[in-house]
View 1 (cartoon, rainbow, N blue to C red):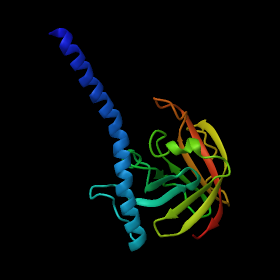
View 2 (view 1 turned 90 degrees about the vertical axis):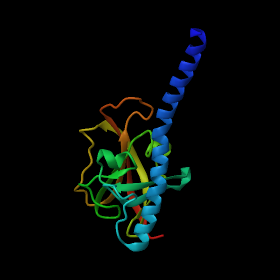
View 3 (view 1 turned 45 degrees about the vertical axis):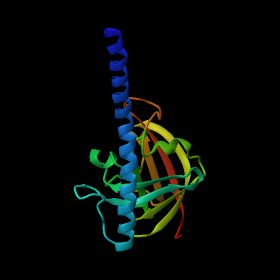
View 4 (view 1 turned 120 degrees about the vertical axis):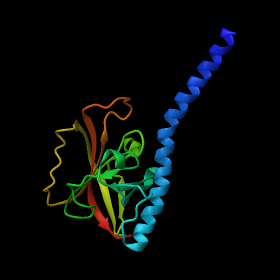
Length: 189
């Protein structure tokens, strides 16, 4: 009897662990579907629309890198709640398309997983919730300590930074961050 229970117990434990790992990716996918709907309603109405009634954040922009087929909805703020569902806009930075640096941050294993595939020269498109559209060109990347980003919020230029934890394939958090820098190259559709 114990020989029969052991394989069943191992199979059950394996199923639970697999389900737990798949849960985070399923939640990220479902959240992006709900965020897409809220973002589209925000653009159409001109007002911030929460993706679900109890949300403490709302969509403010869409990031697209068409060359690699990547897209994500950016949320207001970078609280732990917001980052669980999508990239967040760091409050102390300007909105995309404004003079200065707009900074978006997200987790490396979900919403900014695509950053590993973005190449220097790629076009990053940002559509804000007010319907305005901006195109940036990725022009530099670096790995820095979390407390030494080198980002100058007082820059006179129009810039975008996408940031996430480094290295991309780590299983635990660490002090390093990957920074992808881009410069505005155009506006409109």
